[in-house]
Each structure stands twice: as C-alpha cells, then as structure tokens.
Image 1 (tube, chains in turn yellow, blue):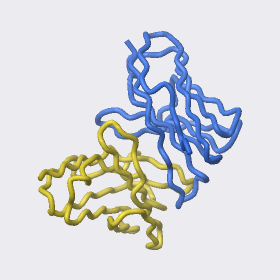
Image 2 (cartoon, rainbow over the protein chains, first blue to last red; image 1 turned 90 degrees about the vertical axis):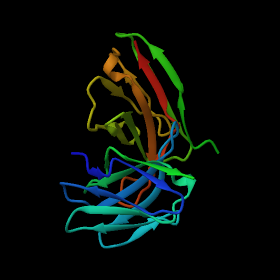
Image 3 (cartoon, helix red, strand yellow; image 1 turned 135 degrees about the vertical axis):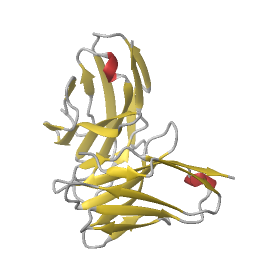
Image 4 (cartoon, each protein chain N blue to C red; image 1 turned 45 degrees about the vertical axis):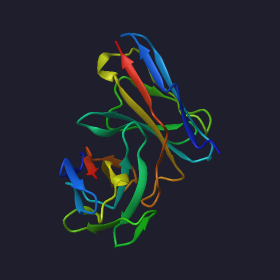
Amino acid sequence: QQPVQSPQAVILREGEDAVINCSSSKALYSVHWYRQKHGEAPVFLMILLKGGEQKGHEKISASFNEKKQQSSLYLTASQLSYSGTYFCGAGGSQGNLIFGKGTKLSVKP
Amino acid sequence: DAGITQSPRYKITETGRQVTLMCHQTWSHSYMFWYRQDLGHGLRLIYYSAAADITDKGEVPDGYVVSRSKTENFPLTLESATRSQTSVYFCASSQEVRRTDTQYFGPGTRLTVL
C-alpha cells in the first residue's frame, strides 16, 4: 500500500516555508525523500531511519515519527529551485521502497 | 562516468507488439529496479533484481518480463504491449537494498502504445 502524501500540491512565494507530510499504514523502517523536476528523473534528498538517524545531501530538514508511522519534510526559505514534485518512499523490513503519489511544489518569484 | 542509462528515451509502438527497454549501470550496483510513473499514481515498482539471475516481482508486474544475465544490464520486456502500458519507465540501482541505501534513477523512457 502506497504511503499517503499531503498536501497534493502547494504554491509558495520565494522565501516562504512549506511542510510535506508522508503517512504509512504499515510499519516504517525508513523513509526516503526524492525530488523530481518536470521531465527529469527523481533525485535523492534524504533518508530518515528508525531511531532518528538522518542522512542527506542538501540543507533540507525532516522528521520521522516512528509511533505514528509518519514523516515530514521541511522546506524553509524556499527558492525557485525547490520547485518540483516531492516523493516519499516507505522502506519496509526488506528494504524495498513503496513510493507515495507525490506532492507538487511550485515556488513563484 | 555514465552512471545509469536507459534506451531508448522515447518509443512509440502498437498494441500487441513486443518492446524491450534497456537499462545499463556502470557502478556495479547489486540491485536494480524498474518503475513506471503515471499521473495520479506516482512511482510504482514493476520488478527488481538483487543480482545477476535473481529477479522478483514488485507491485505491478503483470504484462512485463525481466532478465538479468549481467550485473550491469536489466532489460524490461513488454511481451504484448497494451495501451495501459503507456507510461514513463524509470530504471534505478542501489548498492544494496538496505534501509540506508539510496536508489539512483536513470533518465527514463517515455513509452507510448497506440
């Protein structure tokens, strides 16, 4: 079952903040976040692991609530380059990812 | 350093024809994956492979066949294409399928079945 992402879409002005949520009905062992720009491949942003460890490559923060099986991605002081569709991938015990349907983020000047 | 490549990038075919989408990675990653991406559905896993000659079904495997005779290649075959298989197909790879492993995606193949 796919994790549920909310909101489905959000429009921001440059400098505004956004939160994207990811919720799973199954036990989560890890949450992976990817961003995809139009016509391009998804690009890795961050991994959150059970126990609180985070691994990422960009200055984007996230949280992982193991009890609620939820993760949130925090985008602060948004830039035009943040525009794209954000996907969370729910990692199960075997490591395979089930992706959510995505959240489309549009940042306007 | 090519990374992960897919070919063709665009393909138009007709219902009932066989189509093979190619995926090649230069990292010697153990795991490879095929996803399809459709509006309203996000990325859905079709098949994955843990190593050469080891493959397993994902969420939506019906109508697809995969093989992996070499670590670096993971072709996806639609044996008899249907219109519902019109989609963008992404191949991905990771060193291992563990909780901490990143999947790296290829550029995608846009397939249209008429």
